View 1: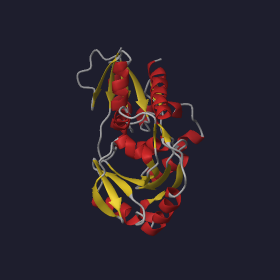
View 2: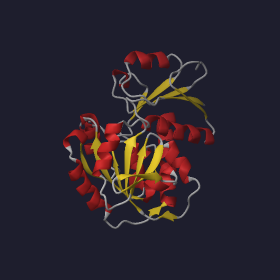
View 3: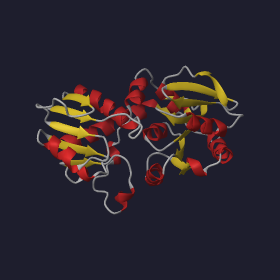
View 4: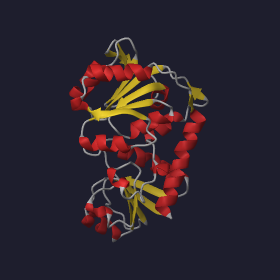
Length: 281
């Protein structure tokens, strides 16, 4: 079967959508499917299945795709949701309070960078990073400075922003972290981030997750999330750095178990198997 994954990375979608589709792309091809990834359908005459992970589709967009192949819409809240042949929600949404038929957390897809950087690690990882802060793949200076101002000065940590991994000491940047992405995420006692895929990745290693959200939409999703181990959620604009620092300090000093990498990998691949069963059946 030929499958085309449709997604993008931009300021509206963030990095999580393309990260999880890249991970699925690799796995589909490993499982014997012929899979590709694109930002639009383009030349897709021989495609048998579209998996569209771009949010907020219109009915017309879905119907155009259906002229070629079946369409699976992932986490889509646009008018095209009702037109799709199948809907799979991986993230929580307030609408699930009244109807959670399409919600499948057991098929949640973790990111490509996270999965690939795990390949060289086995056994377990010590929780030796008190806190990790994720500012975003396209983080602005304001978001980064807010998080740095909240970093407890007596604790060391790591900032993930704009593709960089930088150590934090005394509330300031202190040079490149020099460790793989998954190693950093799974070694963290605490992750501070807006709601998204990174929180689910950190939760696999047993981290507490503090959601500092840029919008009411992100906050609504965080408040509905299960499996992300969110211990606090709020809007960034309503939170003072000092108050956030106190929450980080409390969670960072809690004793946590090592991250079992065998169990982490098992969960990643089990979820992808579940997704494929839902999408292809």
